[in-house]
Image (cartoon, rainbow over all chains, first blue to last red; front, top):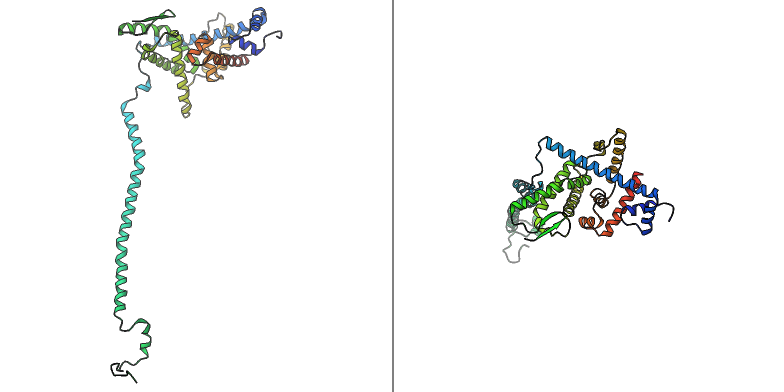
Length: 166
Length: 187
């Protein structure tokens, strides 16, 4: 071991885990012993200062007639939350969870109604057009492809005589 | 009714007489309140918060008084409750980063109530106390707890291990690191 305790050896002594050699040196070396005592004295001063602050606080409360600690301690703040606050939180949670579903359902319903209207209107106009086309076709006296030829054939020729027109 | 005596305080395992129970508990509070408050204040550094947590500590002790088996001293038992409350508060505070934690800063405690004869001595002691107060702030949570239990509350290693739930080896390691850090800062 060197002449004096190293910082780590000091820490070990103060932490209560010195080796036998370190313990012996601390007991025999005046300087190391003084340094150890200085640290423990500083800690004593710190403890006393803390206690003094606590005493001042307690004395101050007694002087201002602040209620001292009740022998039956009151429940902590976390256990005194009003019931209505919990109810409010529960309602908010339900709204947050269910709200989007309701909104989506309403939109889907609107879209569905709109589509249904379009479906109902669309067949009516196309059905009329279809019927008109059919009527036009049925009303022809000659097939459509022959309509152009009919313009060059005279109208007064009889088609009932045998042999037709000559 | 089974009785166990620890540290001069009669800890009754099953209290059947509520009046006597209350009387004993009042004695317990009177005896240990300042000690618990001192440790909690040194840990959280906020007097109002320390008083609240101390109140919570004795509330929990009162609720669980029938579960006290007497396998440790009453002070160790109370310190265990206090350590857990401080740990829970620290963890809760980590998630509440939007809230400004009202802490007693070193500037607010420029004048510690030290008992000294002369102003010079008082100033010197004040300076030492401020240095320790500042230095303990830099320790990790476990190092600070172990350090305060050892040097402020003067618990031994086994008692600290019981209070914190750590092994004695772990307590020694944390204490060693804390002391090394404090000594380095104190110079």
